[in-house]
Image (cartoon, rainbow, N blue to C red; front, side, top):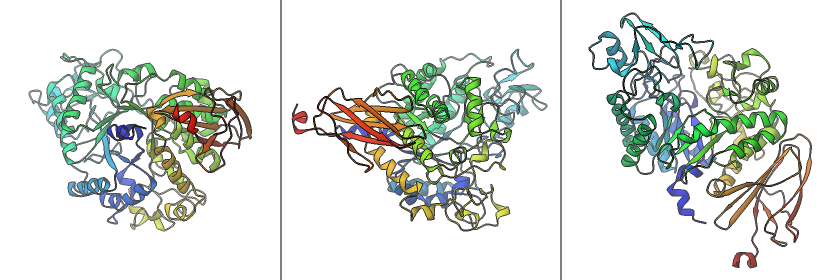
Length: 556
C-alpha cells in the first residue's frame, strides 16, 4: 500500500468535523461559544479521530444569517474572541494533528459591509461596481429564488443608491460583482490572508452562484470556470497542500464540471446527490436509490474526492428527488409543516427522524463512512444530538453542543436566558439523556461506537484510493461494495431493512480457505474454494471485511 500518497492528498482520507464556534463551547461564560472554549475541546476531537475541523463563518457580521452575512473578511467576530484566540486554536489543533478549514462566503456580503455602504452612497465610489445595480428589475428577476416563501425577488430597491441591487440569497446580502477584476483580486487576498494565519483550505459557499453571471451587465473578461482555475492555482502557490471543498448542489454531470477537466478547479465537492439517495434508501429500507446514485457517480480526477455526509448545517435538502419521493420522505421523517422548510427540505437531525433507533442510526453512519469519499460529521452527530424546533428556520439544527448533564448541557456557565441559542430540552433529547461525559464512560454508547467507526474508516484508505465495484447480491435490501487498492481489498455490506437477512455472493478471485476478516469483531467468514460466501446480517446490520490473502496468492 502506497501509504505516503494518503498524506500527500490528505483531504481524500480525512474525517471532517463541521462546527459553529458560537454553539460549540463557551470559554468565558458569556453565553456565546468562542475560540477559547473550542481550543479547550481539541483533545476531545482528536480522541474522536477528527483530522480536519471545518469552521462555519466566524467573521464580524450583522448575524442575520448566522454569520453568512459578513461585514469584515479580515477579522474575528469579537463575540467569538480575538485573532490571537483564533491563532492559538489553530496552533493547538495542528499540534494534535488536526487541520482547519473555514467557510469562504464571497458570493455576497452583508448590507452593512463598508464596501456596500460606500457603493450605495456615491455612484462615483470605487466600490460602486463591486456590486450589481439596475434601474429596473430585469425580466425573470423573481425566478429561481433560493429561499421561496422568504424572498419574492432577486432584486431589492435601495433608496440611497437610487437603484435596485442583485441578491440571489437574502435581501440583506447583496451579491458581489465577480465580473469586476478588483473583486476577484480581493477574494484572492482574503484567501491569502487566512492561509498565512494557518488555515489548510476553504469550503466555498454556494459555488454555482459565485460563478453565475446572469443579471451582471459588466463584461466578464475571464470565463467563470477559468476564474475558478485561477483561484485554485493561487491557492496552490500560496500553500501547496491546501484544498478547496465546494458546495455544489447540482446533478452529478453538472457537479463534475466544477472539478475541472484536468482536475484543476475544486479538490472536493459535497455529495448532495448521494445524501438525498440515502434519505430515500432509509425510508424504503431498500438499497436501490444508493445503487442508482453510485452508478450515476462520475469518475473524478485522480486527486479529487467526494465529501459524504448524513446531515449538514442547513436543511436536509430533497430537491433532487421527485415530488412523490420527497413527500414519502416528509411523511416518514418530517410529517408536520414545522419540520419542513422551503418546500424541499427537513429541519431535523437524524436521531429524531429515526425515533432514536440506535441500530438504524449506526447503519446510516456506517453507510456514509463506507461510501466512496471522505466522511463529514456535523457537530453533535457523534452523540446523537437532536434539533431544537423552537429555533427558527435552518438554525434548528444548530443548537448548543451537549457536553454534560450540568445546566446548559455544560455548554456555558451563563444563565439560560443569556445563551446565544437555547439548548435542546426534554427527557429524551436534552442534556440529561444525551451528552458527551456520559457517553465517554459507556463502551456501548454511540460516541464510543463512532470512535471505532472512524478508526476503521481511517484504516481503510482503499475506499477513496481504490477501485470500487458493486457486489452482486439477490436481496434488494442489501448494499455490498468491494474496494481494491494496491493488493488490498475490502468488502463492506449493509442491510437497510429492519428484518434479519441472509445473503450470498461470489468472489471473482477465490481465496481458498483464507476467508474474510471481520473488522468489527463479529467473527470472520470463510470462503468456499469456488469463491462463494454466505452470511447473515441482523436488521439494520453491517459488516466490514478485509480479504485475507493466502501466502500463495500474495506471492502471485
